[in-house]
Amino acid sequence: MREMTYIMAIDQGTTSSRAVLVTADGRIAATAQREHEQIFPQPGWVEHDPLEVWHSVTTTMLDVLRTAGASATEIAAIGITNQRETTVVWDRHSGTPIANAIVWQDTRTQPQVDRLAAEGGSHRFTSQTGLPLASYFSATKIAWLLDRVPGARVRAERGELLAGTMDTWLLWNLTGGVAGGIHVTDVTNASRTLLMELDTLSWSAELCSACEVPMSMLPTIRSSSEVYGTIAAPLPCAGIPIAGILGDQQAAAFGQAAFEAGDSKNTYGTGNFLLVNTGETKIMSSNGLITTVAYQLAGERARFALEGSIAVTGSLVQWLRDNLGIIATSAEIESLATSVPDNGGAYIVPAFSGLFAPHWRPDARGVIVGLTRFVTKAHLARAALEATAYQTRDVLKAMATDTGSTLAELKVDGGMTKNKTLMQFQADILGVPVVRPLVTETTALGAAYVAGLAVGFWSSRNQLRANWREDLRWQPTMSDADRDRLLRGWEKSVTKSLDWVEPDE
Image 1 (tube, rainbow, N blue to C red):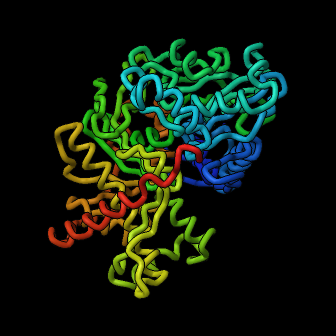
Image 2 (image 1 turned 120 degrees about the horizontal axis):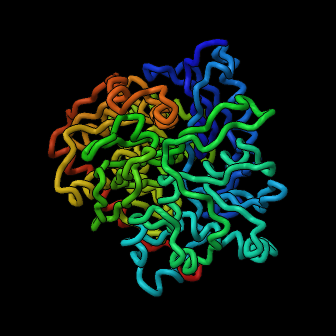
């Protein structure tokens, strides 16, 4: 029997599923990836097919073993990280989803959110959950499915239906599904539902009642790092323990070794998500940020974080590619953007799902402003990259106000950090260095780390911290005058995106 040399991370993201093999020194030994369909039934609606997602996960598990030339016997444990808030409801007896998953970006439940807010404002449940009322979170998605799928609410009340985020859906299927699958989530994913109390780390009967979600549908909440069960035969890696779960942004923070109060990271993916660890202290934001669970190791108290969630960054590049045809591949945006020296006066505010942190304006919609005959597709490509940096700056400004301190540097990760033009502009517009680690797949790394800690593959967080290594650093070079001028244009552009959605829409 071969020595156990890997932890496998299942990284189920918004646009694709990946399986990653991680070595003891924190290196990525092999990766396999499969994209899955993005379904847009009507404006504001975003769906995934849960069965397609499930198939993509099992396929990548096999693919990564083949790529590495590895055997399942070399894997000590498996960790799961997932797109958060995306919600699945399925039949516990057949294993069949009652409808497509409603994705975190989806805005169809805004009328339910408005009704909940009518009785106490958008912060009605913030003291309990750390979250504002928004269509972003899972509770209203579950209720919408129960009310819109014929017979679903009656079946849920009879105990026939289960609900969960993608981690729960995958864990249930991996551990046997209808033949004894484990219905569990971890504290980080539970903290994104609008149904868990931060003080108790448990589901709230009051919140479930207000949101019209039967508690019997919900998974058991566990820590982020413990053995939940083993993979059932005849699935790939049968018998291997599943020992870690983290929502994707918390996983990225853990992969960046952001273990203690003050540690932070910013992930550049479909959206951008900036987390600052606040330790065992819950800081409630006064500036549009979210209080969330950062992680909880078995037997320990939970660690918390302030988070700034930005809905559209990398997906704006995909929009330029798929909807406008300005580029043929996402990678082409950098060369197109660098073919001009600046944005030509054009700004893009990508409020496709409204504006998330720090604004929380569901009435906003995307706008392109500052257009003249001078503006070309190259200027729009540059404006799209710059929009990512501007939105990150808005979140960091709110973060500094909430915490009373500013970051000396910004640690970054995610696919968009390959874009050196974006990273340099990010450093320029923030006025602080931007630092990229040697391993940028920090989401998968974090999922592997919590699983490996649970089974003794790694002994401590100090060992994981020693794995972190710097790759590149971008120093700010922009003058204060240029920075102020560009930020004035951005802030003016944001005001033009507001008040687009009327109440009857």
